[in-house]
Image 1: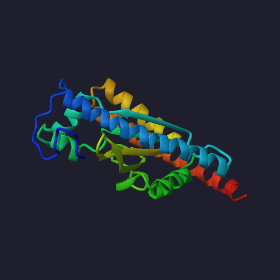
Image 2: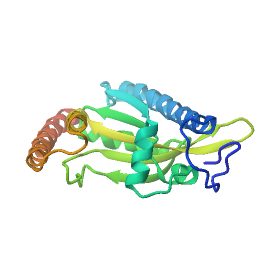
Image 3: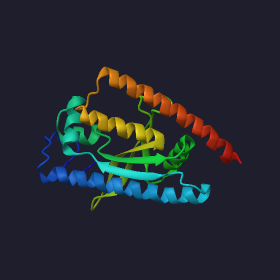
Image 4: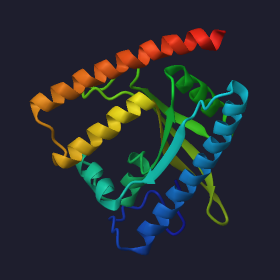
Length: 215
């Protein structure tokens, strides 16, 4: 992403109190709003076609400065704007929640055909959940944002989950926050166990849905 007055190759240290930082965050917010608006249109079109809400709800957020810095330190990136722009892919995040597993494929197919999006990366944590038990389908995409005399291609992370997956991940996130980002070994095992139970439930509901969808 090329940002006005700040070339992407400049190794300028990050200062969250400077106007430059807020300018960059504003550009990410513009990208997030564009993608969310596209998804809202997609939500309406899918509902009209399938006669039910294929997308149950859409939420979005911009990563906080503290969270950005923590991630860069964890990944051992030098704290400069070049690394922020090139390597932190989830500054703008959108979560799409669907009722059924098959709905996730419907949304992914449409995102891949969206002329305003360039898919950079896909991460399937449904076929292969994380060790923590986390499931979901992640897409890193970029969209062109008008920044005056030019356009900047800005990255956005889109997470697509079922309501069951979203319940588990939201709950686990809250538990980790309470535990200062580290659950005990015993509690981590319990959460993996519950994730497997939820996944099994999701699969059984998907079978029932598939039967009636055919009819």
